[in-house]
Every structure is written in structure tokens, then in C-alpha cells.
Amino acid sequence: MHASRSDEQQSVEHIIVEQLNLKLGLNLAAARLSLSESVYVQLDGLDEEKKTVCEVYARNGKLKGSQPDKVASDLLKMELVERLNGGQWRKIFCFGDPEAAKLLIGKSWLAAAAKRLNVEVHVASLPESVREKLIAAQLRQVMVNK
Image (cartoon, rainbow, N blue to C red; front, side, top):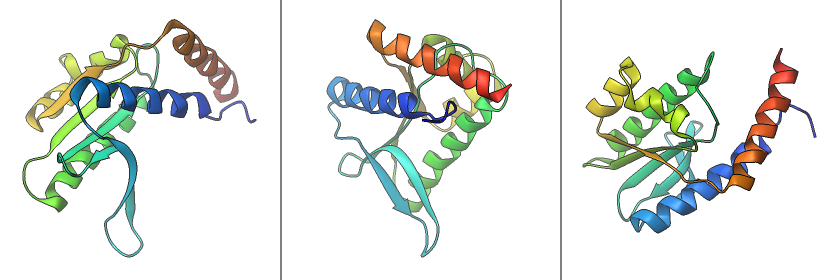
């Protein structure tokens, strides 16, 4: 496995989506939504019946560098899903760590955008063993990306 792979984060994202399903009574599942013949978006969670879309960011600690840009693109992706499908959609952004979530619940322009776009911000409660695996993966990835 290459040191920069994000298998651990993807695994944690699935755990977070399952937590949201249990907590909020949803049936979110990863989905690939077609925008045209050759263009699509990959969603962390979609429940078409309950008109809910969610994106997940599994990271421990404050977001750095271009990481806030990923969150911004995910906000835009959820807004696009709502506009393309019509009506009011429930939009949820869930983080795996309270420190990371501060980006959307603080005083940043992204927090203001999330509020204006009616995006709910949630923080998952991860078991300590899962959090430790996530931290180990982040340390490995930092060493590669220096």
C-alpha cells in the first residue's frame, strides 16, 4: 500500500454514514449521481426517498492547506444535487472530529456559506480505536507529502 493512500479515511467515512443513518433515521448510501452522459459526482451519502444528501470528512484535527477547499467543493456538490433534483433537500456535512468541524461552525466564510445553504453540521462520535487508526494514517500521509 502506498503511504499516501486514504483507505483508513474511506473506512471511517462508512462508519460515520452508518452512525448518521442510525441517529437520524435515514438510509444514506454512497452514490454516483450522473449530471450528463459523461459527467457525474460521487456522494458519500444519498437517501433519495427522504431527499437527503451528505458529505463526510474523516480527519482528526484542524483542517490545513487545501483541505478547506475540499469542504467547499463538497458544499457546492450538495447544493448542485438539490438544484438538479428540485425541491428542498436536507443537506448534511459530518466530520469525524470536533476540531475539524470548526471550519463550518466557526466564523469563517465557509461557515457562513453552510448556514446560508441550510447545511446541517454534525460531528460523529468515533470509538477510540478508530480515531487512533485515523491519526496513524494522517501521520503516515504527512511523511509522504512533505
